[in-house]
Length: 413
Image 1: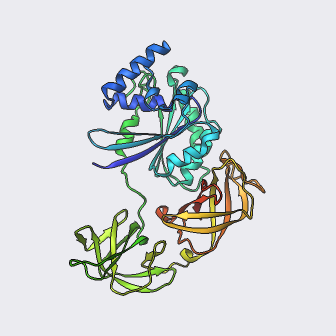
Image 2: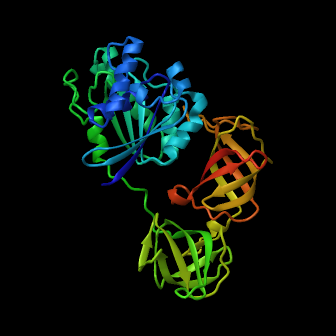
Image 3: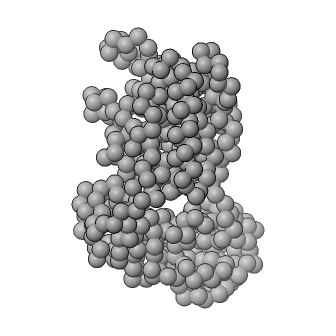
């Protein structure tokens, strides 16, 4: 059974948590304890409709304020598919949480309040979904029950969405649905009130999406550990443990060690007692070479020598995650996979306003939640691909050397 990773986002009080709770309830995926909790909290609040938001608003502070602060992950499965849903907060101040929630997702569900239409956060969330190259974006125009299930309201907002999406070069699969998560219209079951809508429900859309990371043939193997074994079964055994970030490799293939450029051929691919002729993206294995070449943690094995991987100049789109501002000249650690290198923020080219990404803004500093085009200078190569060409090896994080906090996430150009 395949797995689909979903991120939900929207502005404050757009009903993200209620939508997820409704989705689980109508999919018969709630436990008896969760059903009892919903009934209990609904009675405490004196509501007429069931309060599904209690399923995801797990933190006490969230419940007290009626908002979602941190990213909540929900795991469940239907008869056909497994799902992991990341419920991201809606506040502008928590845009960094949305980036975190969406970074591992393949689908983004963006909620829009039918009474309000597109807001600043809508533009921001779609921009981030676009930046992360998510394959599918589903716009759920929620709270249709509060606009009398009006088709005109739906069509007007849908036109605004299409206008916004048309400004971007990258074109994900976009779905636009009229729903009421409170009443259950077009979430799992088709709406009996909005018979003018003949498209798919949210559940049908999610079940039709084919999961899977964007594939690339470029072989990238992150060396995490050098294995030395000396016993009766393995004499002078030396292998390199790590994960195939992208592409594939087979026994007998020639590989290049970065950054030295030394070449050798794959002698064995092993995981515990099992050996393989070929391994592919996502597999963690031990790789043994025919020759005794210099390989250590932090190096990378590739098939083709790409000059970009050895570059110390990295241009990227950066999302700044820290309360403390940054300026050109700031020194940090750049980490991609197991590779960590010293770096300096060389230049802030421009801040990108998500609500209008075509109008770049010149800036001398970056503050929390800013998204900007920047350039870094690294002390040694970080072996990073363009995110456009290889999503699996094109992203990195920036670490403050004083606090050890992650202060930024970047996507290489």
